[in-house]
Image (cartoon, rainbow, N blue to C red; front, side):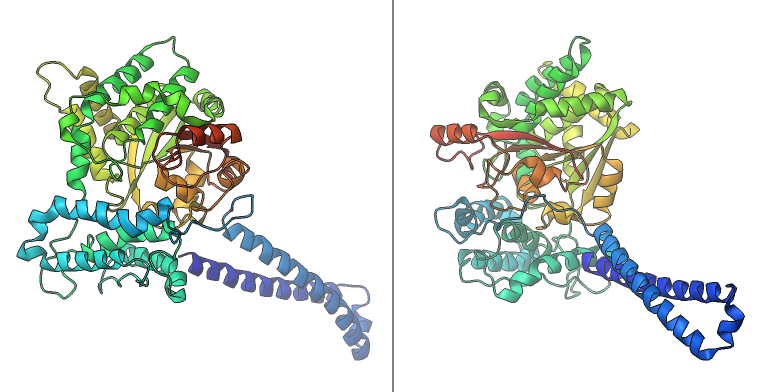
Length: 527
C-alpha cells in the first residue's frame, strides 16, 4: 500500500539521520584523538568540554541540515510524479444536464444494470443464485436513489483469503475512505470514483467473483469467476468478423509490402485502433445480426475529419528510433472486448511485424467491468475464435491468417498478457500502484492507453481546460514511460485540443464530447 510504503520511507529517513549523527560524532572524536593538541586538550577538561561543545554544535547543525536534505530527497524519490500544471477539481455527478449526472442517476441502473439482469435472468432467478440476485437488487435500489444513498466501504474479504485479495480490498478502502467519511452519496463523490465503484460492488461484493465459497460457509459460491457481461462480449466478438476482414486485409497487405514506410503503417494501424474505440458495448450493445456487415470501413473513411488533435508525427519519430534499436517493449492498456480488441490486436500485429516492437504486452482487467472491458480470457477467446473460424466459402482469409499469427505470437512470447487490479480501480493514473509503476518505468518503451475510461484516469477525471492544458503538461510530465492516448470522446473531460478544432466540433455536434464522433491521438514523453 502507498501509505505503508511512505511509512517505511519515513522510518528509513529517521534511521539514516540518526546514523549520520553518530558517524559525525565518531568522526569528531577521531579527529580530536589524532590531532596534535589531543593530549593537552584531554588533560584540560574545561578546554575539552568547550572545544567539543563548539565543534559538536556546528557539526550537529550541519548533520541536521544534511538529514533534512536527505529526507526531502528520499521523500521525493518515494513519491510519484504529478502533472506539471495545478490539478483542477474532479468532475462530479450532481449537476443535472451533464453526462456524468445522467450516467450515475439513470444510465447505470436503467440501461447497464437492467441489460445485465436481462442477459443473466435465466440464471439469476434460480434458487442457486437467490442471494446474488438479492444483493444485485440492493445495489440497484441504491443507484435508483443515488442522490440520497450514502456510500459505504467495500465488504471486507473473507478470512483466510489470499494476500492479493486483501491488498485489493485495502486499495479500494483507501480510495473510498475520504468520501465515506464525508458522507458522500453516489452523486456527490467524484464521478470517476463512483462509476468505477459500481462495477467493483457488482463483481466483488454482489457476485463475489473471487470467492470460491459463500461467505457464510454454506457451500460453493455460484458467483465464483462468473462473468455477467460474457453474453455481450461474445456477441461483440461474433459481430466483429466482417469488419475485421477489411481491417486485417489492410494490415496484412501493409506489412507484406516493402514500399510502405513506418510513417504510413503507423498512421494506419493507430487510426484503426483509435476508431475501434468507437465500438463500445456499454454505449452501443452488440447485435449478432450485423455479423456479416462491414460497419467499420465507413467510420475509418471519415477518421481524419473527426480528429481534434493528432500527434502521429511524434509517434512515428519515436517508432523510428525503436526500430533502429532493434525494437522496443510496447504495452497496450486495453479497453473493450469485441471489435475494439480486434483493432488492438491488429495494431500489435503491425508493431511486431514491422520491427518496431520486439514484445507487445497487453495490460488487461483483473475482473469483468464496464460491460465490455477485456480480461486475458477474453483476449485468448478472440484470438482462438479468429484462428479457428469455420470458413468453407473462403470469405474471411485475413481473419484466419491473422488469428493464426496471433496464436504464434502468444506461443513464442512476442505477445504477452498481464492482468492488474489497478486497471479496474478508481485511482488517477498518477497514483499508479506498485509494482506496476516501476515495471512500466523500467521496462516499457511506449504505452498505448486505449479508450475513454482509461483516458479519464490519465486526466484524473479533472476539469482541465480542453485547449490551454497540453497533454504533455498534464500526462506526459508524470506517466512512467512514453505514452500515446487513443481515445474517442465519450465524456466531458479532455485536454490538449486546438481551440479552433474544439469550436469546429461544437458547431458540428452539440454532443461532441460524449457520443464518440470525435477523437484524439496524443503523445507524451513520460517522466
